[in-house]
Length: 187
Image 1: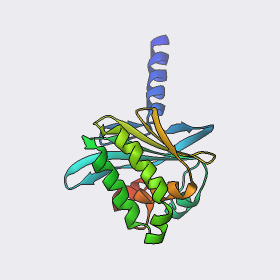
Image 2 (image 1 turned 60 degrees about the vertical axis):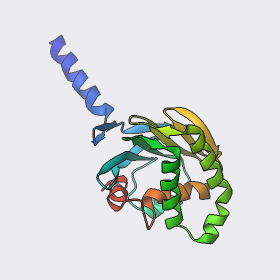
Image 3 (image 1 turned 90 degrees about the horizontal axis):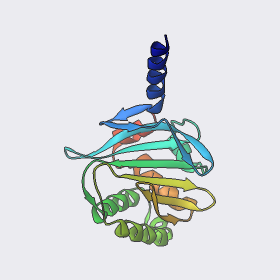
């Protein structure tokens, strides 16, 4: 009887530990950002040509299917990028900048210039990421977007406008990848 109970408890615990698996990456169903407990909204894989680049997971205070509502919401949230191939900071930064540029006017980009330069400094200090690394983009309303690699904070960039620009990489009108946007929205 004790053995059956132990096996049943083990199965229940392992089932709750991971809500979703994408391309072999097990994603927890919750994340803690500041004092907020967030839930997995959706996740998908970023590909380029035939290459798997990263698995992206979006964590929000509550599930949400509207990209516009998520981008406008200024509560805590997280985007995790689970890296699947070697990437230099230059390649990662170029991909981020390209997607940000696609979703903003020249005037909007001009207003973000200082924050984009801060992001470049942070990524350049990281130099490269490898398969298995995790980049966390945590939005904390009081301080801004904290960028971490493998749990180590690399810098914080102030401003809700910068965070909205980051979210538009995946959720904007011209996302990096349409099916990834749909997956992050829980579809």
